Image (cartoon, rainbow, N blue to C red; front, side, top):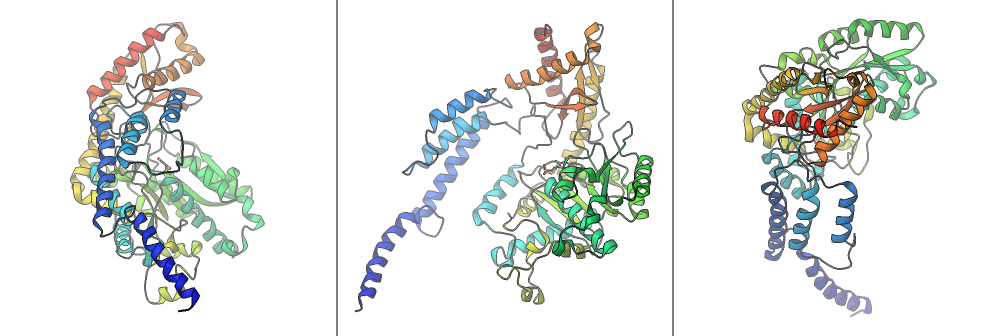
Length: 516
Ligand SMILES: *Cc1c(COP(=O)(O)O)cnc(C)c1O
């Protein structure tokens, strides 16, 4: 036997022992592997569920520095040299890290567009991460590619009502808004200037490109503009009416002014559910303008898109089907664990503007045989099978339950606005369109109530104290330079009693803190 063959055999023996050592860390058919997986899952689940059964506050109240100390004491190394028992590990994670996390499922955790996740979707996450499919190519996902395509088709019919529509799951609104404006920019350059941005980058005229959105649009419109190399200067803010909706007369004025200055208007972004007020721009009216000026019409329905499931409220989205592209988030009013969103486009041929062919992922001969490689529609390569959790949730709850939850939170927001309006020392800022209520504490009959600096400090302090006490989690926002508090009522388990308790606690706090 040749020397190198002897060497190979010896090495094979060693490798088999080494391999056995790794065996249990991965899931396969061997008993010890299944045993390890089942234990890890059990301990993780217990560490997690324990935090829910033993805790009725939305936050422990532990200050930032104290948590850092606690963490350092428990986990003195980031990468220890040797193995740890999963039991101890997950117990510690539960008792140290989860215990001091924000409990988004708590009915008084009402700060942001940050939802309690559905349990059915959490179970689906086990399958999503367990199978670890990647949506970029058919050969890394197979059935998952088909499921995502089915979901996208369904969503396209729901929102855009067109056979030419298509879309892709995304990490959320930031990515979807970026993709909308990317396609809008590149299509404009191709059509109007016969310029291929994918190949040649930006032409000199790019500094004249302009995007129009209301002044209450999400900051990711500006962010997209600078990421697209157009600079924030490319975004023109349109005035809003008293309900924080885009004012179409001002849109006309802005577009006219820009055109007269020789600028190049190419996209309008309407918002269906602004982050602060849940306001919905007049979509059909804005669509008419976009069509008239031949501009791309993108609708950011990250928040409000869910109203489409509700018979009672879907009329608020009238005109959404006129969008050239659309953002919808499922990790908001669709109650999905982060992250889960979609980007939809009215005419699928626009995806050609971001398409690249990589020989190893989506060779052109796959296209000839009709094998779909979803990477052609995404700016992500490796991508999660998030479509599955939405599919599971749809089946587990059914449309009616989704609609009832959405309807409930909208009526809860109305009732909350009424409670606040009836409090003499509170000032309500908006009649909620969806489920965000913005207000501030402003005591009557004392001179300081006109001191805006004092009011800002007082309202900021109320929010911080509520968080420190772990009583409730509210958001703080600024409107016309003044500090306001915001309740985002996404949780269908929040009741008007929870709201009354928050209001009483605020009044109580103000009495203690009034000396500031
Ligand atoms: C949340 C939100 C976004 C950003 O979406 P992410 O999912 O956080 O990336 C954009 N627009 C609106 C209106 C939103 O509410």
